Every structure is written in C-alpha cells, then in structure tokens.
Image (tube, rainbow, N blue to C red):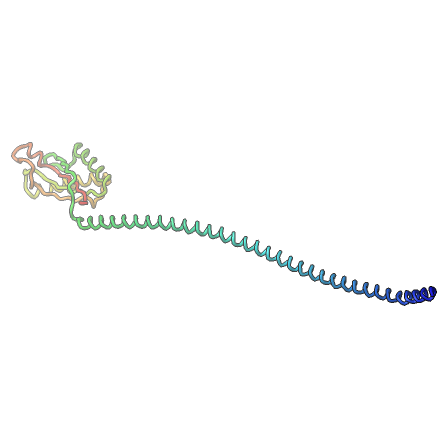
Length: 237
C-alpha cells in the first residue's frame, strides 16, 4: 500500500516538473516584457524631460535677452529724457534770448523813430569864440589851441555837429566885410578838417558886420566883433 502511494506521489511530481519549468519561463518573459516596457517609458519620460529642460533653457535665454533689451530700453529712455530736458532748457534759454533781443529791437526801433522825428532838431552843447586881428583871416596861437580842443570833442563824440558863423566889425564896406568874414570861417573850417573832423559835420557861413556882440564905436567892442563863433550841437534824444 505504501509502495503504491509512493508510486503515485512520484508520478505526480514527475507530472508537475514540466509545469513548474513552464511557469518560470512565462514569469521571466512577463518580467522581461515589463522591464522592456518600463525601460521604454523611462526613456520616453527622460526624452520628454530633456526636451522640456531645453525648452526651459531656451525660455531662460529669451527671458535674459528680454531683460537686457528692457534694461537697455530703460537706459535709452533715461538718456532720451535727459536730452529732452536739456533741449527744453536750451529752448527756454533761446526763448529768453529771443525775448531780450525783441525788447532791444523794440527799444532801438523807438530810438530810431525818435531820432528820425527829431532829425532836424538839435541841442546846443557849447559855443566857442575865435578872435581875429583887424582885417586879418589868419588864426593866431590862441585860436589854434582852442580849435584843437574843439576837434578833440568832435572826434570823441561822433553825434556832434558844428555851425561856424564868421563876423567882422563895422569898419569898411559891407561887401568887403562879408568876404572877410567868409575867409575867417574858411580858416576855422580848414583847421578842424586838418585835425580829422569830417567835412560834412561842419556848416559855415560868413555874415559880415551883422549881429555885433559889442559896441563898434570902441576899440574893445570892435575887437570882440571880429570873430568866428563855433557852435557845437548834439542830437535831440
């Protein structure tokens, strides 16, 4: 009986041996399939991670570039603001200069208008008398010295003009006295021109014995009447 049981057990074990081998093979195949599948999934995940990492790196580079561009833009904006401020300041300064120039131009225009309106009006400045000897038209030393001072005033002030009026005493004929007074005026005018006074600033006339300043009946009076009056005039402001 025991032998039969052992025999049956042995047969059963013999039958199960091939089955166990088949199961191990199946398991190994399944494991390999799983490993292959997992390996493929891991590969795909790593590939995806690498792709995402590259994309993030690209985005980071772009962000840095954008930040650099933005910072450069801010710097340029600051420079532009500075230039605009400087331009505004210069414009304000130019406007101030223009306003000042306009004010000066207006003042000049008003002055020119006033001068033109008063172009024939003159203001007496000074009168100087040049004395002459009897029947003479030559300047003496005193007359030459006086005319040097007159010439200096005229050269120092270009707005001054001169009226020269020649006179004689009442001795002699009227026509002769007019001619003598004209020679005396000419002597004075020539002396001033020789000192550098422009001819157009000198107005001259010989009037003879008219307008005496003293009594011709006395020698002292006649000495005073033999004269050229040098009248300096300035413009009316």
